[in-house]
Length: 135
Image 1 (cartoon, rainbow, N blue to C red):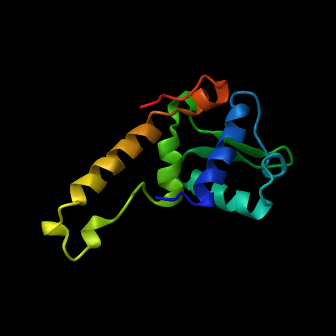
Image 2 (image 1 turned 30 degrees about the vertical axis):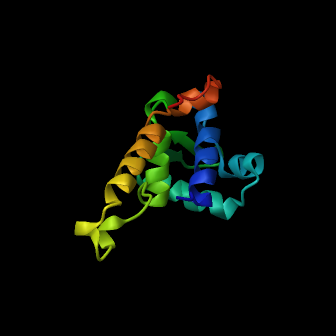
């Protein structure tokens, strides 16, 4: 599995917004500049995150984005699932030999471990730099 730039940049974007949680909104321009991501790409990612209720926007000259929940309540796994349309190593069910395949349980278990890892990383843990849970 290789994560796309949507997930990698999306996580950087959401962390930029999370840094200001409870203080102020974060503008698209601020995100694009600090993360060195094009404004257009930032906006595309923000649309998906807003549609999935991870962030909300405030309009106006001093508008921007903020989280809908505390950083401790948002997990890396949520962001990846939204931006990648799921966390999958392989899509075995589309395979012609799915029913008799000897390897499908390996991929299923690996996917489960990966999801568990990502869903055990809240945004605040990354922001606080306290290290990530290791398996």
